[in-house]
Amino acid sequence: MKLFGWFFIVFVPFISATQVNVLIEQNMDWYKPYTRQAQEYLILNEKVSSYTSKIQIELPIVKKNLFEFGLGLNYKRISHLVKNKINYFVIFDGSTKYSPVDVMSKSHSLGLNFYEKYNLVKKGSYLGQIGVNSTIYVLEIYKSEYRFQISDAGLNPYFEGSFRPFNPSEFLFPLSSIDLSIFYNNRWQLKDNFSLGARISLGTNLYSDWDQFKKYAWLGLGLEMGFGKGIGDRK
Image (cartoon, rainbow, N blue to C red):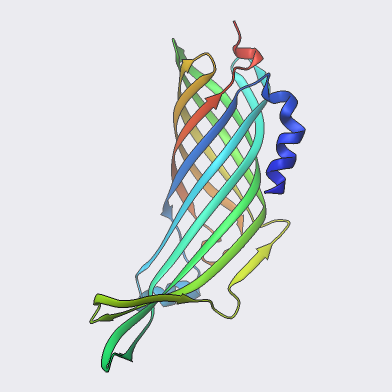
């Protein structure tokens, strides 16, 4: 979080003179070729899922006519779940109970993003923009844990708990991943100092330290909010 603090200290002079955009995005993976080891495991257990969400802060640095260039901060969260990683039965309350164990892994990444936007359509308060965004993640904290549930044949849970593996966490610095995406942004200027937009993006990773996801692509759906009014937007 210290990186967020230094970011605002450096760019506080710009905030009063430009619009700050906040993007909340959910990624839907559509191309994710797992590694050979992961593919062999999926043959035995297909109950594997992952979810990626992002929060991005953008500050325009250069804004001329139809073109805009800026940078900002990006927070990425990945949740990776393997259901029934371990299946076994235990003796509980004098009877045999079913007790599957799931593996939940979470990754928290912080990075610097760079973007370019071009205005394609401008009509009244509506603005349609196409752009390119690249994020370099310089910090990642990875944690995992085993979660289990003692139940009767998979129903009526009696007890739930969790425990950590031998190496439950990992700290990665200074580089964990790099991605690149193109996007189209629908933006409405609702007030002089506030805009609301919907963004759709298509992206891929150029580098990743996750073995399962060294090559993948996603479709992103996001909500964008703009605060403040830049010099280029003033009448």
